[in-house]
Amino acid sequence: MKVIDLTHTISENMPVYPGTETPKLVTANTYEANGFKETLLTLFSHTGTHMDAPSHIFKHRTTLDAFPVDQFIGKGLVIDCSDVEEGQRITMEHIHAVKEKANQAEFLLFYTGWEKHWGTNTYFGDYPAINEEVADYLINTKKKGVGLDVIGIDPITDENLTIHHKLFAETEIVVIENLTRLGEIGGELFTFFALPMKYENADGAPIRAVAVLNE
Image 1 (cartoon, helix red, strand yellow):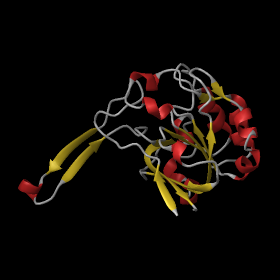
Image 2 (cartoon, one colour):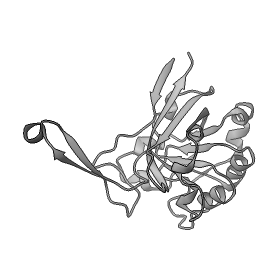
Image 3 (cartoon, helix red, strand yellow):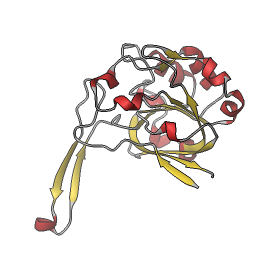
Image 4 (cartoon, helix red, strand yellow):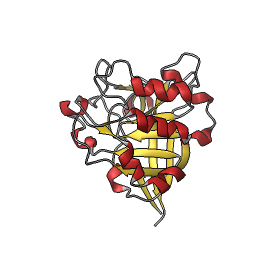
């Protein structure tokens, strides 16, 4: 068994979506003064490697805390989209190339290689994103979730969040953004864990995303 952590570390200087404040990690208690260390965390719910719930877009849709926990565990498949260039879209051609495995998977994770720009301004640029036909496939095959190694499932320029709306209007799928190390998994099915922080009425939450590979 091989385990790969697909999660960026939360830090005060990490990349965040434009317009969002960076996290604050304040030492609230110290070994010297209190005999233990405790940290006060202040961060937005869509910080770092995180998950979007349908309620992120639609007021009366499902929140993360309302999902059964098995929503966040299942068969994953990484689809290599590293050939998609800046400003281009991920299309059904990438899925057709691995169609049999894609149909079996409960989570599709699209590897673009964009994580190499993590920590630079380019990360917020014209990164690859899925098109609406791919979104239709995710809906029609009733996937539990979809993930990418970019900051959003919609292009940064799409203020209407077209793909978010399409997915969350029609299905209980979850969306995972800012994944890392997808290129280390390979092309076989694996067990995927994406466990969000459980808080009340969660529209989104940081997750610990993990791939468990059978060797």
